[in-house]
Amino acid sequence: MSAYSRDDECPNPWQATCLRGEKAARAASARAITARGGAVTQSGAGSGSEDDSPFYPLHSFHVRTEQPTLPFPSKLIVSDNYFRPRWLGLGDRRLKNIALVVDWSPGAARHGMQRKLRRIHTALVASGESANNAAALALKCLMDPKQAAIWEAKAPDENDDAQLQEMDHQSSRFLAVVSLSEGETLRRLIHTESSQPALKNSGCGLALRTIETMTPIPTTTIADDAKAMLAASQSDATSGLSAAVALEEEDDDTIVADMPLLDSTNDYRAPVTSSKEHNSVRVAHQCLRFLNGDMFYTEAELQLLMEGLKTAPIPDRASFFGSCHRLRRRERNVWGDTPLAKLFTAESDWHLLHVKALIQQMSSELQRRKASAKEMFERFGSDEVHDGGDAGAGDGGSGGAGGGAGEGEGEGGTLQLAGLQRLCAALHLGFSPGDVTLIFQSMDSQVFQPIDQSTNRANDRAG
Image 1 (spheres, rainbow, N blue to C red):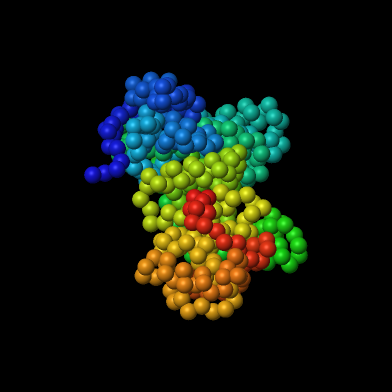
Image 2: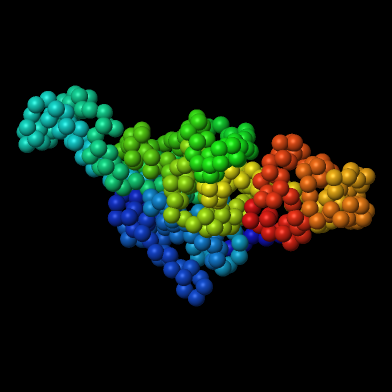
């Protein structure tokens, strides 16, 4: 029997005509989600009126009552059929993967005409016409597609026009998370646009995208970066933050892939490359990947994600991600040694991330073997080599640890470098000598104080 609730999962139909107007889009991004008596309610969806949108803002999204919400960009909205706020408090729900995203520009045709007029006017002014004459001629050119194309080609590069970039940035563009069935229906509407009253001559720009990209997934973790930052901080006595900045300047990991486009309507206009609007779409893309449980990002993608969540407290980021991730099926559940760990850590502590990941791995292995960390530290606390064999092997580690505690009992309160190396080898963690040395050097007093199992569990929860 499934541990997840399946009640009230029938899709709620809604009228496609709500995609026509900007009023419906702005209502979706500002839609209020209120709690009444512990149950979260919202206005109904599907009546077809512009005031009644089937979407709600992503910054109101959460899967548990106690889960904090995050200040995602206002252009990100979610369909009721992906996750309904009224499900809160009625049992856990398996979160769907984000397969399709709707790139929705309600006023795309009008905005496209405005930006074309702006470009023609700029070209005419550059040719020597006065501003007033250029405005009149630009309006005439719009009536003649050939003349419009000629003058638009003479306009300066779009990225050099600050006013045009600001116009694009202020335009209405939303990225909506939809269910797979909604995405399939919208794709059919796009394919039959000319015969669909909801889209025909509506001026609405609509495109289907997927957040899955062909960006190569990093094959390494944060270990190399962390080691370099720690070495820099130790060599020149600078802070971890300064070392991180120095490392970032030498890093050429600047790959950022855009969301692949599947289908679009005739009036759809993609954001201009390298523009403010393009950057805001890229930020939104990384936020959607974060919602989908992705842990691997290039350095440039991670910076975009941090820009999207810059006002969110670090504990809230980790709590939100953990609450969503536990409702998904994923091969990897630990993020401590992935690039995502930087999002959940203060920048001044980034050089410690690799060490924290190693300590978390050691703690998890001790718990798996049911071995007391204190007994292990007492056993390996002496520089004298003990004949205990595998730590915690066979009988959960209690016999071997007890035998080791008798030897070197006077030095069992601390763990020196040689003892730490023997402990890691006995646990078969696969740590390199450099990793063990890094753990040892990161400690304030150059020694490990014995810790108990409760501390291990706390470290795991923190990680």
